[in-house]
Amino acid sequence: MNYTSFLIKYGEIGIKGKNRHIFEDALVRQIKYSLENADGKFEVTKKQGRVYVECLSDYDYEETVECLKRVFGIVGICPVIHVENNGVDSLCRAVESYVKEAYDGRVCTFKVNARRANKSFSLNSMEINALLGEKILDVMPGFTVDVHKPELIINIEIREKVYIYSDIIPGPGGMPIGTSGKAALLLSGGIDSPVAGYMIAKRGVQIDAVYFHAPPYTSERAKQKVVDLAQSVAKYAGPIKLHIVNFTDIQLYIYDKCPHDELTIIMRRYMMRIAEHFAKENNALGLITGESIGQVASQTMQSLFVTNEVCSLPVYRPLIGMDKQEIIAVAERIGTFETSILPYEDCCTIFVAKHPVTKPNLKVIKHSETYLNEKIESMVKEAIETTEIINVK
Ligand code: ATP
Ligand code: MG
Image (tube, rainbow, N blue to C red; front, side, top):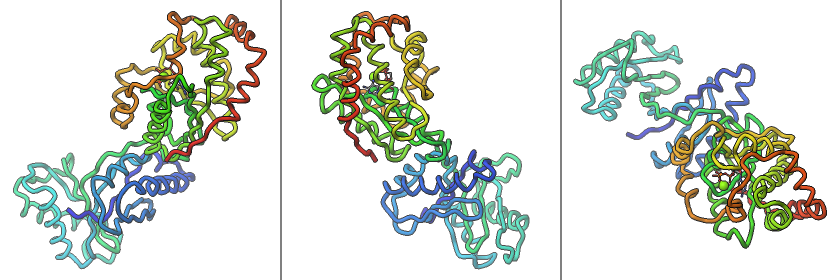
């Protein structure tokens, strides 16, 4: 079938009243951005409360649908054919050949759902439904009519042209990026944080990312892995400003001065402080992590309490109640899992103690941090100043 356009169905954003146009404009913008990854020339338009993608040249159908499936805010993608509006006979022929080509041999119930936006057409909607219903029954032996619960709805829209569509490919749902502000994602090379970024982006939030790199303990390849993961998330979330913080000196200093069983928790507090610095600098309204209660020692409720204590921005933890298997299922679906499981070292694992505290006490941790007083401020400043920024698309 040679589809000439896609009708984009959007759910939640349709109900936002006066803000509706802001959401629609963001949706159009994100569709255009996503289609940059597809071969072909497209025009994305918003008319009469509908968003259409018109295909202006040859294009790859599968690739185009894949791109659209990554645009948050879309609930359904309907491949459409349009034909000239040349009266009733021509309409019947077009619909007959459409159903024959799309559903050859199929056994199912159906109904026709016509909308006559162009009132100059000689039949009204009810009459079109009845006539086309009959015509379809004639050419499709496996089809029977069910007007209440049809398995298939053949939609006909009579406008300047005639639009025919029946298939609805599910979109990702959510809200278009850029409609909910910005947040900074602490992005490691693991399985969890890319999923966390995806989930918050799905609510329309633009994402910045911060990665703590510890060369030479973590390699160039570990860093590249994080860039690759940011790229995978950017397919959904749009361009990501990725900050690569050189964390080695801070880690070594903590290792040198603090009790080893408190290392991870103190290190995580410095990560949050630095990430919050970049969040504020970029007008982000929150931090995002891939933490989930009880997953590891640094994610017990006590540890989360102690880590959280250094932040003044809200910390969004969308995986907080999820099991690893559930997180992996999302990672597989969004295409980050394969990269996440590549075996490059992470800065957290290198300095990790054999028996890290699982129930850190805030007072004790704060006291241990005083051992860092001499140099830590200048080290944090240095880490911030030497941070590398990569704009990932
Ligand atoms: P992930 O699979 O996301 O790496 P994890 O299970 O390994 O998570 P931790 O190492 O405890 O868990 O990290 C918890 C969260 O802290 C991560 O989800 C991420 O948001 C952040 N984080 C951990 N290490 C780094 C890092 N090197 N750079 C940036 N953020 C990090
Ligand atoms: Mg990790």
